[in-house]
Length: 130
Length: 366
Image 1 (cartoon, rainbow over the protein chains, first blue to last red):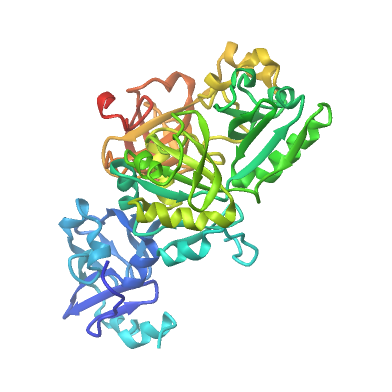
Image 2: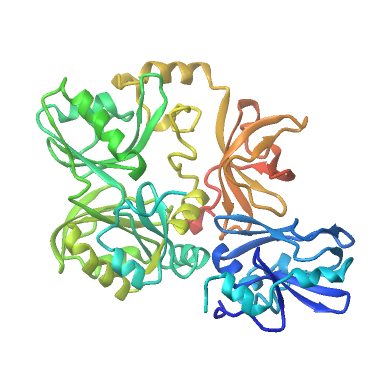
């Protein structure tokens, strides 16, 4: 498992999701903290491509050996891609939460929602770090 | 969420933390759920050797001229068949046949037995033993504080333990006293909860740390309760509180084999009737045929779309790489290869009832 990190270029949702914003498109995933709290991810249930997802609402499920957890959408939009690697190798979420472990790509319906997300420093503060 | 304030710790607590344990509250104890990871620990036990700290498990010692008579009254199996140096599995039942606990009993000497309890039931088991002991000439003693317990499991377990012990290890379902460098007299039992060969070692609490370290140094992998649960479920061993409870009798739980009603144990009348008449539901193992992981409490759906049972244990099997579990289902469905669905939080997952065990650790029978 990778070391704890919260990259500066990403935006964060308090439910421990990250979003990488590129214009009106974004990639979503869960943070290092989330995957650590969950433990070994053994199953990922992606949404369907084309599904509409809403900020602050669950859009997918990740399941570890002992627990299942909803994944909360950091922003609203339409699913344009799901990570095809995760059906066979859900452990990528643990190994590389911000890279190979990405969950979905989304066409944002309201890019102004980005302003409500946290930057890395604010998210680290939320976690009680320094 | 249980408070961590009043949790008990085993004698190994500090070294478990040092070994990287992730600790969780379990039955009033602060116990290691995992170290490196459940899957890796599970596979280590299947392919080599794992060591589990199971010191939270309780022990009740029954001794005296009528120790056998008391145990025969309480335990479902025929305790008179238990020889000195033997081990026997049984359930403890109420008058109505509801299961209070499932237990291993070891006969240490002629009038001297040691019964291992589940941590969550130890106090109530002890009270039950004492309540009935007054009718018999025997002593019932709480030995929870007297023993730490390490389970050493896997194909390499015996070799690793044998390298540390001064005597012969007992075969399966037998016990032996063995000396270790750290403890002159430990009780080694050819039992376990993983389906693998191996032993469980009861040892003085002050010596447990040294034995733990020697086992790790000898090649055993520290394994937690998470792996213990996935291992036992692959071989369809019951977990009290999931698959067994006071609402279920041993016949519907598939434990009729350890019930000898002719001994007249408490609950035997009800159990004899259940055996003769059959039960409305039966506990069966199942495996999902596609994606998903069943969990305790998920509904079982029959071919007509009706709810026909409930999952009592479920996980992703590390060896089979499929969602597996055990469920109480309507008796007419309780045949292997019956197609069912599991309602996993609103999604119906196709599944099939299987025969026991779900995974066979013995390669010749796999």
